[in-house]
Image (cartoon, rainbow, N blue to C red; front, top):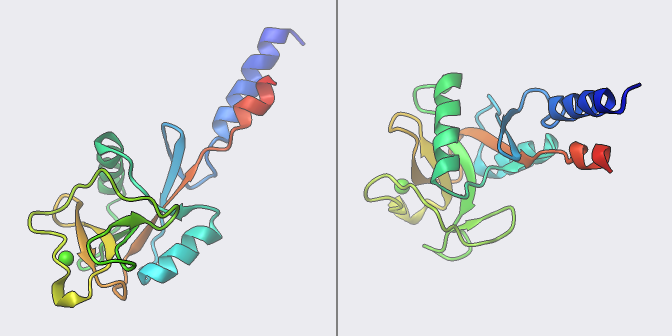
Length: 160
Ligand SMILES: [Ca+2]
């Protein structure tokens, strides 16, 4: 087979399988909203089960992409929000991503959030009916987990 054709086919295959089916691809990452309302702790486990992590968000561009994706899905119920992987359960007001325990740098909070209402809001979610701005919620609420994973690096294997 012609070398260029072979490379083209392999590239196509690697791109096709960059994200597992069911995931949405963006840049080097893959995203899926699980249509199962769960507590935040259960959401961590469910994302693990699909070989992903409860989503972390690095910057405004990624946040915008996620909001657009969630709007298209339109699967959220009247009082069900979306879980992200952030928490301040270790120290009130110190928000970290559970995946790597790094401090959250970019944020997109709703005005006057996080407010730690009732001294019992330590888990990060997106407000479905308020443009998906961020809010701190009680970790016992049942929301939809947004899972994220990096793409398989198939193309590097192929080219090598
Ligand atoms: Ca709150």
